[in-house]
Image (cartoon, rainbow, N blue to C red; front, side, top):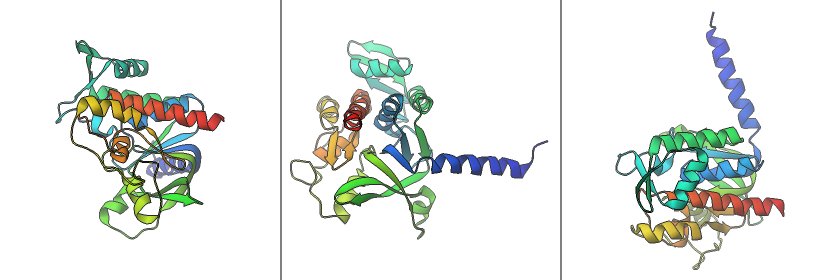
Length: 258
C-alpha cells in the first residue's frame, strides 16, 4: 500500500542529497542545450564532477524545437559523427547534410550525459557568478519560479573550478558579469562583441573557433560563444554546437589535468 508521505519523503531526501553533493564540482555548466549537454557528457566520461543548471522545464535549448517547430535538425559530417557516438540515428539528406530527429537527439544526449555521471538540474536559474579576486569560482542559483514571479528571495551558491556559459543567444552570465563588475573580457574589444545576423556557413565555423575562455575560469560554448566574440547565428544546423561542446570539454580537461 502506497503512503503519500513516504512518496514525498523519497523525493525530498533524494533530491536534497543530489543537490548537496553538487555544491562543489569541477565544472558547472549553465544551459542544457546541445553544447552544454555535449560538454557535460565528455567531462563526465573523463571522470570529472560536472552539473548542468537549466532554467527551463525542458532540456535541449534551440535543438528541441528543430527549425520553426519542425522537430528535425541538420548537422554536417563532423556533427553526424558526434551524434552517432551518442547513439542518435541520422539520415543522409545529401552529401554533407544529415538530419536527425530533434527529440531523439536531445533525450539521447541527456541520457548518455547522465549515465556518464553528469547531473542535470532543471527549473534552476543562474542569476549571477561568484567572482573572487577576479576569478570566476562558481554560480549563484535560484528557482526559476522565483525569477518568473519577481519575488525577493535570496539565492544559494555552488562552487566550481571552471564555469561554462552555454545559455545561447542571451549570453546572460557574461552580461551580468560585465554589468556588475569592472572587468575586461578576453575579447578583441574587452567587452561583449554581440551576435550577428544569420549566416549558417560562417556561424557553424566560428562557433567552434570562439569556444574558449572569455574571462578567468569562465568559458563560452554554443551560441554564447558567437554572441561573446561577435559572429553570426546559424539557425537549425547544430553540428557546430556539438563540436563546441566537445571542444570546451577538451579545453577544460587539459586545464584540470595540468
